[in-house]
Image (spheres, rainbow, N blue to C red):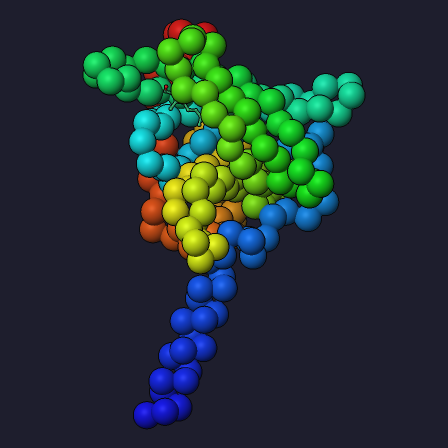
Length: 193
Ligand code: RTL
């Protein structure tokens, strides 16, 4: 019995450790030049409140001085049930860790959301898939209370079969397995850009 309780305690401890935001691993030797260009969101885990719904894509740009910015767009439904395509802009501030940024973002239209969020690149092969993560609010125990995450693909059709296992593993590492939704691409934003 005691053995059982002790191993259960260790298991709980190990699990709690894993879900600490401070223990989350990001991609090693992040190369922003290879990361640049268009990414299609094919999966997302939503934060609390208003968020991008579908048809989400991002375009990362690295300037000559090395600074990174991005544009993004996606469908949102604003309070009055108004479906529209949100055009967003972002700048990235360095943190000392190459794959961890602070992202300041705002809408091209003044009534869209603005924010300043963590922007971490958890994993990427640069040519096919990328896993993004952001924790907005920490719990007292170091786990995340309010996070969002995007699974990006270079291909609008989704992830390649060979990348799916890696992505599932990373979702699990983020303690977010089962919390993602597929992101549809219907061309909703194509006419408005
Ligand atoms: C992602 C990629 C990099 C550029 C930006 C991103 C996030 C955008 C968000 C937009 C939310 C907009 C809302 C508008 C309704 O008012 C990470 C995709 C800017 C979170 C909710």
